[in-house]
Length: 78
Ligand SMILES: [Zn+2]
Image (cartoon, rainbow, N blue to C red):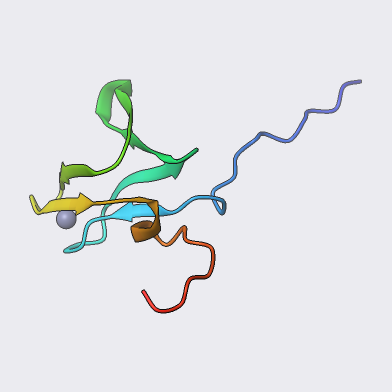
């Protein structure tokens, strides 16, 4: 009898980097870096600033820092 520990997934702790055009999820914020998942198991952890081309619509997305992803701790304005 073993109790499965809760998986340490914290989707609410980080922001999501989405395409500005179509909303496709490009990466998720993980420990201050961007976790990019591609097909075939390719994964990347990249720092800021980062640029990525949307796989869906081809738009070029750029993010300067984590605060751009909505992970800022309640800052005034935007
Ligand atoms: Zn897109």
